[in-house]
Image (tube, rainbow, N blue to C red):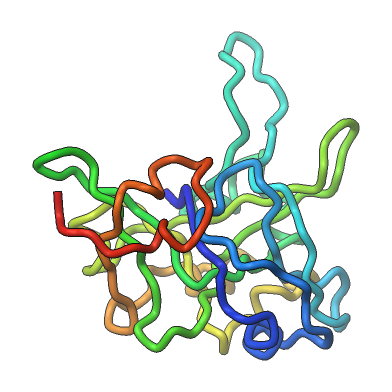
Length: 222
C-alpha cells in the first residue's frame, strides 16, 4: 500500500515536471498522511490544460448492508480498479497524478518496524497514479492512490507499491476522454527498480502528527 509520502521539491520544479502553466504555491511536506489535503495534477476536459488542485486523500465509500463501516479508502489495487463498481467510473473518466518526491514503506525489523523512504536517485519527482471523485454532500473532492506489485527494490520491504507513471505517459494517463482499460493497463506495471533507492529513516515518521525535515533523518536498521 501507500500510506505516507513526501513533497518537498521547489514548486517551479513541480510545475516544470508536470507541465503546469502556473507555478503552484506549495509548502514542503515531509509526512503527508491519509485524510489530509494533497496536491493532484489533473485535466478536467479532453485537450484542456493540466492543473494542480488540493484534494482530500481518502474516499468514503457508500455503506454496504451487513458490513462494518471503516475509514476512508486511500488505495485501490490497479489490477481490479477498472472492474470494481466503487472505482470503475473514476478510472475511466477521472484519473490524476499525485506529485511526490518520495514515499514511505515499512518492513519488519529485529527491533520493530523499520521505515524506508523510497525516492528517485536523481531527485526528480514521481507521478503517483490516482483517481478522483468530485465533492458530494458533506464530502470534499477526494482521491485514491493506485498500487501494484512491488519491484525488486520494494519486494523485501512490502508486498505492494504505488503505481508510478512514466512522464512520457502523463498525457495518456490524464486524458479524460480515453479510459480504455486495455490501453491503460501497461501504464500500471511496477516501476523499474534501477532509478529508485530506499533509505532507512528514523521513527519520527511513524507518528502522523510529526511534520518536518526530521522525518527524513537517516537511521540504522532496527
